Length: 173
Ligand code: NI
Image (cartoon, rainbow, N blue to C red):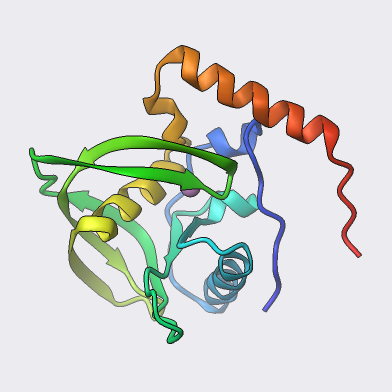
């Protein structure tokens, strides 16, 4: 498994629409392994493939709070039955480092997807799981949580992020 570099906003790649996966094969499984490793090393709870620069409709998540890991893999996810009742969570994103905002989303939803082995599954999601899967699925459409904020708030965040990028000379050894 390889830890990959996570793209951060502003970056045009993050705005790309990801493509459907034809079949879940060895390459896709290797990608999911790398994504999971990358997500864990960055202390995230969800990651979409485009966040490491791969425009495929693949998401990994792990919402377990205990030491025991419970990874979830979603290939070609589709959302149905979004609840009209919304809930609010304070969201962050590995591609929008150190920025958080309260975002309102449907409180429950149903997700149809292929799992790690390419089997078709349906998941009824609520609470944090529902919010997280919707956040990750936005990535597949090139959408970030800051897009739900007012223009002003969003531009302030992007300015901050651009400054952070200019300032930091990052070395990876
Ligand atoms: Ni994100």
